[in-house]
Length: 141
Image (cartoon, rainbow, N blue to C red; front, side):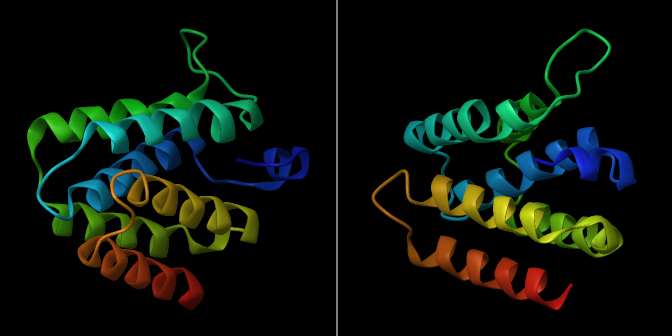
């Protein structure tokens, strides 16, 4: 998610950002040991309604790059990766790209994880702990 100013001034690789965001959303959804259909549906809706409309770039096949969030989420879910390891990987990605993370992007990250976590019987304790850690990391940037 970016403004026209971000497009010209940012060095952030948005394709990689969307992939990493998909990993983070998986980590939150899988923090309790299971990814539920409602969480997947919330992710898809978030990408479709809140990421894709604001992403002007496409990949070589013409696909809006925001959809990499969904593809990466589904790919990593099929591998049953550890939620903790995936979460820590996203935190490292955040730290490495801190200079390119503006307030708009930080807000979008938090909004996305909250949307997915609330999709199935509200946010549970494990999801909330992960979200709190994420917010602390974002605040520290």
